[in-house]
Length: 285
Image (tube, rainbow, N blue to C red; front, side, top):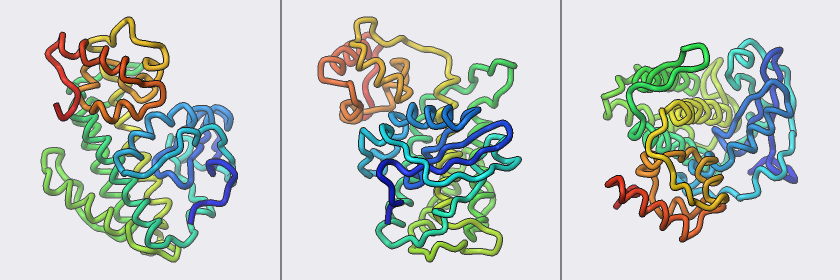
């Protein structure tokens, strides 16, 4: 059962330095800001990027989901919030989860993994450094995500070692175990002592995966530029979804591009021509 709300139900946790806004029914759609308003604006801004996750999960996300963000709960944050983590469980996280909703939640987490993997494939090993010269490069970031995921899994009763970044079998086994647990109906309590309820576990796991996936996109050095004559709505749609170079477009299909608000056949044709000039193609071609 979805959170009762006239719009998209949002939970806000407010720390001393950071505020997180999280869409309660959409695991992974969480963003932060210095104020509640800034966090809500960031959440709305990231809708096009999160829409790709929903598409991969085959879950319908309304294009207007960011038009009415309704804060249904507010809690004080903690040190984790200020460190940069959505670390507080909402009351709504303890709601029972029926079979259909459990399957939906698990699918959205799996969608986050799919997006992460797609971005990894087109991300160079060395990433642009942050303003202070910091930030992990690609492989260290992948390792960090996998190590954290193994730790998060323990919060729902799964004890598995963090996989090596090149151990595909172990990565799939960890993900399968997490997805299987999240897909189970739940009374809303944590499956283990001092653990996390399924809703919060899904929210935290998907957020962490996507936060680093999007960081990889944002810290990738610019490659071949998008066509100069691309219509403004199409350019905004691409940039909003994180597709800022022709190289990035090789990870997305024509069908998925046309799902973006603002994209049309003419713009896709321009992109196809530009890709061909660089001997590139859309995904699956």
